[in-house]
Image (cartoon, rainbow, N blue to C red; front, side, top):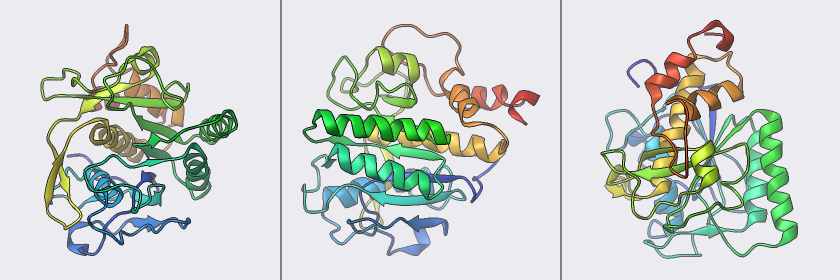
Length: 278
């Protein structure tokens, strides 16, 4: 973050809830809305969808010096909501169908997204819906758009339809000592393909423009997506697989169900060679 605040041509898709953008002094100017059946700007500040989307957006794209981490404010944030503001009250985790997520993934990639940030709880699925989601994630892999997904907060051991996909980078949550939080999901695919990132008492923007803290893998995922966006901003010639491997392999070999800790500096150093175009 001391080296760059990102580049506008690096587009991050926020596949989440709508974002409250009324207080323009808190946000960077590089926010775009991608049309869908749901509004991209909040209509109910008391909804869980608005609170969740605004929080994650703040981690990524708030102005530097605001209440939020503001990892990559000069990258372009593409808001593609999938959470309905009427589905849950503030404090409840919003969810979406696999079909809605699949459509949002394809829409975001077609609109130019290079990093997908997905902090998504899925509703009841079906074999057909699962196939559509697999196809959408395969589409992301084929188009070179890196998919970052929250591992989930059920204290479960195992993988979901999203986190078991070979192209997805699952993100587990850790405390300020790097230890996995009690509620974070872990598993073989999370350990093999993912990383863990800060997920306890993370400050960001609330729906009223104030500072709110949050915990869990939804708070951790944008640290990884934002790091990828900054790396791609510094190494624009790098391929998606190089950026992805720089993050997931930065700490060397791995074992078991706990993924390695996010190490942005090691990832940066791994991309300084000629093979990455740096």
